[in-house]
Figure 1 (cartoon, rainbow, N blue to C red):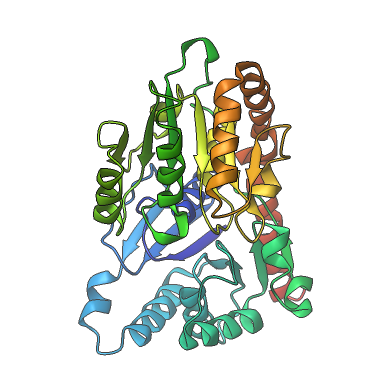
Figure 2 (cartoon, rainbow, N blue to C red):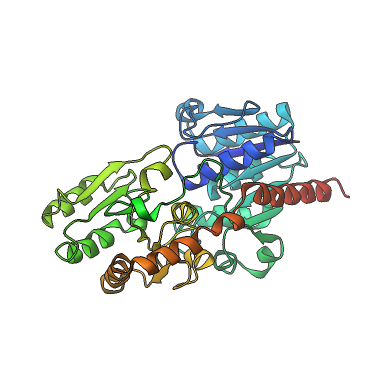
Length: 363
């Protein structure tokens, strides 16, 4: 089987991480994958199997008068030359362009929604792309039932909900007897992630938790703004922004608590990873319901309303001050490993691909 992924890039990000896990798992079953990247150089921040090829058309697109037409041309040329069995994209615009590129080639197209449909793709052109994808994609994969419900019934009928896969083979396990007095978070430094809320909540707890620090891993456009906000709170020696890290699990495994403060998410990969390590976790009830797909509040973590300093602060202090509760939440959280097992999720994707191919072949 040959799969063509059309992606913006293979740098740090949830979609890229999921792509790498899926293609590496498929590679074990002699599946060839080509990842065509459009907005970055030919670089992958995630390890890839030998029969996974990354090809960048970034330079060609930059030189083109109309980038979208260049993308369509390159995808079509790639499909004619390489003859993939399926084209997959996790990006609304790229999937729409791919659907145009493969017209008449009888290649099935799969789109996967990776964010909150109500909060992204709001520009008029993005709405056009979305309509194209709704009509042209043979199958649509959602991460949550909440995201699926945002689409019309005709789309829901040809869709399926699949959680993100997780490769836990080298994952550490949280040791409660050896944890640091540290609260951690992982996410791009962008408005969607609302790390300012977390910093604000920590500032309200700083005197009550004098030995604790807050560490927020990730990089993004808000770095300077967040650094200035930390300084304005007098927390430069208590709140740290060390950037994005490869193998993030080993950086956060000894923390006392993981916190996700996002306003919206597709499904929060960082939260899944923290739970799989066995960390007690607090998450905002980010739309369209990704955190609630993972956490049963009070059993394997805590969910609080979005953008509420009061509830986030209360949840943090309650878990930090109750070590037995933290231990129970962490132990229950670790069971997420079974639900997101990479082999199980990979097989679900393979079934969808084979079904799409069968439909295209008239089976």
